[in-house]
Image (cartoon, rainbow, N blue to C red; front, side, top):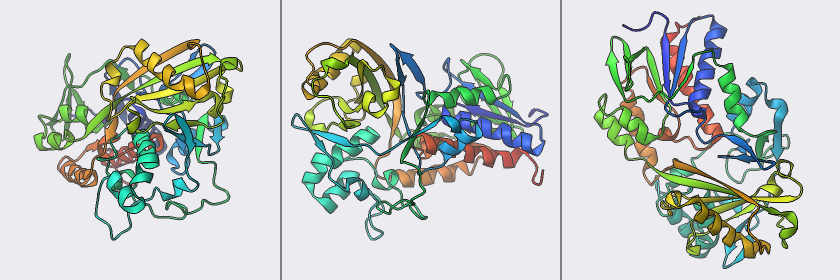
Length: 434
């Protein structure tokens, strides 16, 4: 039997699942309707790779260090959580590309040319195909491939243009259209790190909502609702369910309930990533950079795809006498990076940086964080796949997805999708007009 108080079960306590749980509890309270919300997370901590940690006097991010401001969901959630006073807006900074041992600035106006194909073009094609056809092979190879491959940690020969750069409507939303004079800078973070979003969301949830170390192994229909199966103990009854998991985990969860839906989800692959933080004495850096960082092309043959100079982008987060760098490795082109020993990854990263920055000594300290299956790979045809997934979901009233399976990319997207899915589920368990 379904519970007497309507119950929503959310599987996954990444940012999308937590945002959904917060939205549900807040909206139910506003309507004065009792609602039970349970968030089941297999690991021992919430937030996925959205986490902040202090190491050796520096404030380091495990995952994203900023969120874009042209998508409002991230800023809006910070305001609702009482964090807007801690927002720090970041102006656009220079980003370079590694080219034959030198750092080259991106061409002026480069960012304005990252829009989608014109309406008369194909419904979808690879980013590589589109850029070569529109701008030529040299610009693709020297600039577009390293930048877009690094941003998405993807193989641009397979990366879907339509999924990566969907057409948007509305003032200021089209690539190349100038923003309003009142628009905030393009990126924002929180004084103290973006991990505060996770901890604040968890603190706002009612006691007992978040259950860590709870792995879900299956989902079944039962008496106007669902049964959420776990390895130990009886299944948990739910009126509605939100799956906020990466596609492969969601496919496993749905393999008995809907094998065709699970099969479609199984077509979405993921790439793993590694982030390595390194620090040197500031006086050891003979050629201190002024740019925020740089991207590394596939032609370099390195598992490094990008670098952020933390001491330049976030000087307030690092000790004055240290120069801190963050290196991104892995992605679709280098799947073996996540399995390499940490010492090897540190050495590889330091060897890449040393000649660029004029460093001739080992790092003072380093930190290595591994993120298995963290980056969804949206290959050509992904929008059509998402349409099929949404159609199959229609056969399961009360079941929703949030996050990577349906195309969320980045922090604001993940928040927005989690809240939108929560609102749809709320409409199924809270009577209209209340």
